[in-house]
Length: 111
Image (cartoon, rainbow, N blue to C red; front, side, top):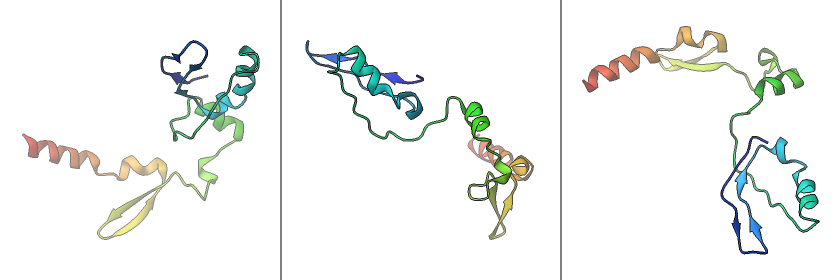
């Protein structure tokens, strides 16, 4: 399921289990809960946020995603230089970034 949960809280008749799991893993979980609680169990869900996909390669393969063809959500970056921005292809980012130079500069200032 790739989820996590806290220690269940119980008062004898009622047990509450709090946790989180990817939507794809719990989409049909209500049916399982009803089955092992003889129809008495309930599930309440709320949106927690986005987290890294645990099986991203499989998902990408299944939908046939190609980052070079995705014009609405490009994998490219925008770099700023001399007051203007220019687009850098995703596979050229490391050749264009100046982070290493900046980190060396900041390290030198701290010593």
